[in-house]
Length: 213
Image 1 (cartoon, rainbow, N blue to C red):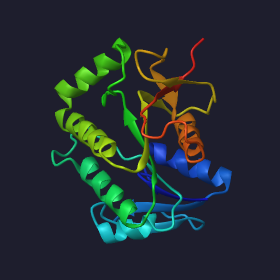
Image 2: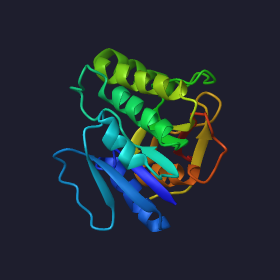
Image 3: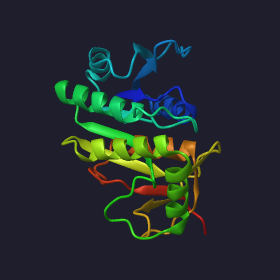
Image 4: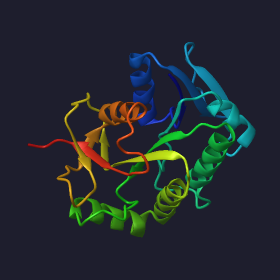
């Protein structure tokens, strides 16, 4: 299987690379210009995330594209860089006839089918008030993905932790599934790779969290 990763040089991206290598897939990583990322056994394309020609090169021949792009700083730029990058990726995928797209999102980007869950609603409101640029980019990215005719899945998470995978997850819409607040990045990576081989959540945005007994 050929998989292209965007956002692979971030904290969660490292877990995606490790999971992909564990599964023996052929990985292509798109790294921003100036990134120090280097790994001999991985194909690397470097450039700007809005450079459609380079993004097309990165997704060409992929069976699935995974994105771990998202705001990483309280001082997130106002020009919606994640939304614009996602638009470029989805356009490039369409032009290269690549149909499967799996992206990390958050409960801040509500699903029409969600119910009420204060554990998700409260942080979303705080992000909206105190990190407005991040909030707009999270919402913009989700709207862009939902408008796409591709076979997308948005994997919505809350607090990400650097812990080993538990492989015991709550999966489902917020307000209808009992969710905890946290999940390990290793579990997120495993779930995303599972979706590359699974059609259960095509054009859906399940929340996932660590199972709490």
